[in-house]
Image 1 (tube, helix red, strand yellow):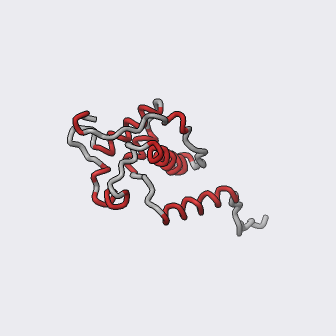
Image 2 (cartoon, helix red, strand yellow):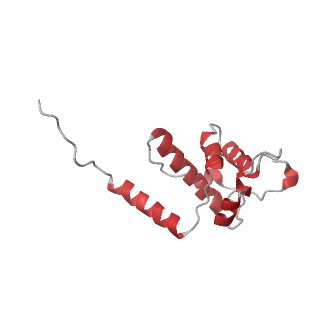
Image 3 (cartoon, one colour):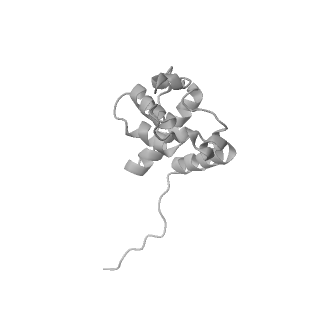
Length: 132
């Protein structure tokens, strides 16, 4: 029996469009994404509020002097000091990116998007006194 050689693979045009669009957006403007905070969001298997709280704690250092991903110089320059957890629109973009990246990496799936209503009202400015 002769071995079959695969020379082309099927690429879903919508997936390819999404990849090209995400790349174009990423080249045009900074994406509110940080890997450790995104992982904290993705890996929280509770409700949206708990996932946002876990990611926010990673971003701000958890209030106990731990690693604060949002305080890194590179992230500070890229995001120009913006906090993705302080603004509803940035929080939605952060959550979408976190789920898109890690669902693709962990399960090989295309993410369909975060429910904006589930995140409504969860953005809040960080106050160090809150001890988050």
